[in-house]
Image 1 (cartoon, helix red, strand yellow):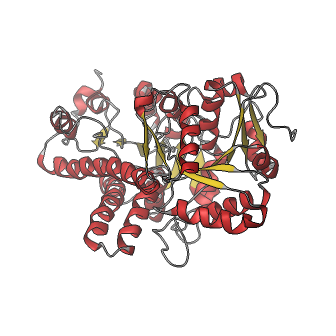
Image 2 (tube, helix red, strand yellow):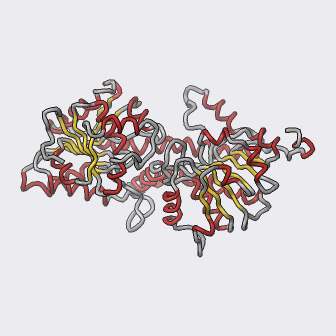
Image 3 (cartoon, rainbow, N blue to C red):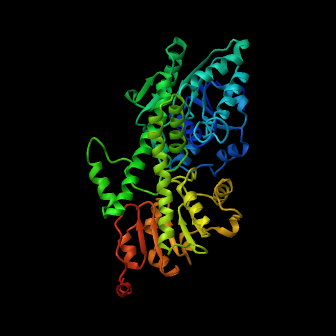
Length: 485
């Protein structure tokens, strides 16, 4: 890559450290909307960068491939040379992974900031001119202050100034490109100094290329950082709330979909995130809530911490409850029985499997010695194998090849299965030939809909024993009528 970042055709240069689910799509949208800006996406993983430079992108998002093809090589560039990306840039987005800590103080709750600090130290070490540094990763409150300390402590001899801003992402996987193109709001947090306010203005200038100014909110740093955690906590809270009601519906004969519709028509509540399911997943919800819990505990806000912890507790309960329903329905044993898992991604329109409910359901079933058959239209076999290999709660002696089979079609996964479990709401699962699937299964055949996307009444008439989240029990099928369907 040329060291002359500001070529005659570019007014400005933006780099992003981290080529993941946030960095790649966000920078692609900036490149599309700001052709006069040179955009560089850098990552220490050459394998990841090679994928971004190929015809097989490392992530799946509707609309992303078209934008990459339109901008890559024009004003969007992917590189594993992070040093040059830092040198070339006027503005640096930091979008590195900040997982939940698995060790030490805050284990299981606090964010692991190792990658973030390494990025800050690399910027300080390499920078040879003033830089605007943007927090794009989800970080705890007051992380920006810590980043400034690291930057200035390591760059004092160079007499270089840094401005640190917070610009959290509010993307939903599966609709990320739409969320980037037409965001509900863009949030930018900065200090009140003259230099930092100038940095805020530069970032606002970028977003104003396509976002109406009234949707660009500027706040102080701490409010911006906290807003990201709170937004995800509120959304996850709604999911756990409706899932809690789904358990009550099953006991009372109420239908959770009807309850959600009635409640959602209240203008004060709204109908978003009221779809009962087997539980939420993804990279953000659980991680951010646990981070929020840890922060509250740190400030001795025990009751507040307990409140948000319950959102996670309900989500875990929902997954365990679903698995137990499968086991109970199959005569209290799934040993050596084949269970077909339709969908392994945590939601449709993405290949992301982080914190997916599917792996938790499979874990419970594997502990009962079930045989698992998996089909997902987007998740690769490599990813599924990695998820099982990295999972710590599998039964002793677990051998993937003996216990789990990955299939290339839903029909193959369901063949000779005792039960099918829909765990991702892929639209194609609604259109499957369930008569064909039923005929290929061991009888009695069971269907467990963890996303409430199937017509259970229709499946029941075909002969299935059915179960939906928060749905009334369907009476046992009248076998004398099955042949007429």
